[in-house]
Image 1 (tube, rainbow, N blue to C red):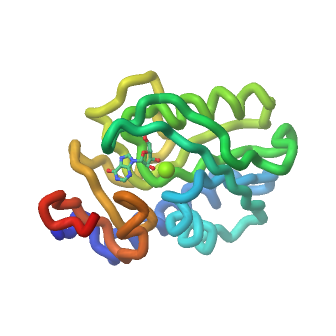
Image 2: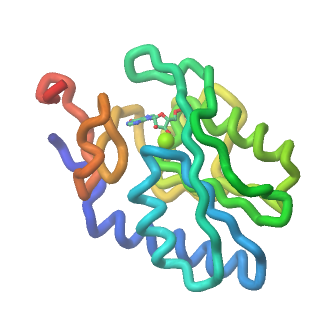
Length: 174
Ligand code: IMP
Ligand code: MG
């Protein structure tokens, strides 16, 4: 498997994300909302770079796939437990591809009137976007490849890789 982003590059990028949050949200009530499962490692690393008070919450959604592509049909499997209207919400996402998943989620969360809502994504496949959805901070723009590792899967495998690799479908064990 070809490594696309090394552990060291990930570490540097995560620090940058932590600094962005620390500098922009000083003195504000912050809620980091992580979309399971893909963002779990990114969230765990980013939150340890945050030096201001913040809270953490999880949502789980199911995006319907046609092979490796999102169909845009998003169903909530596990919703947030808290009322978000007194929080500056930051969605922590692993990767934005078509943008359909976050498009649905941001519309849903905005309707709950948070103090603000921003998106922090580790990876962004901008060329693949199908809806009007942009992250406030994207750490890496990547080409149209299917990637795994650092939380991201193919058929639930490879999430545990400490780096991000391009999946070679001919080598994959699924
Ligand atoms: P979107 O709705 O097309 O933007 O898809 C977003 C979700 O699809 C991400 O949160 C990932 O869970 C998954 N996804 C998109 N591209 C990849 C990839 O290259 N590798 C692994 N998961 C991906
Ligand atoms: Mg995801």
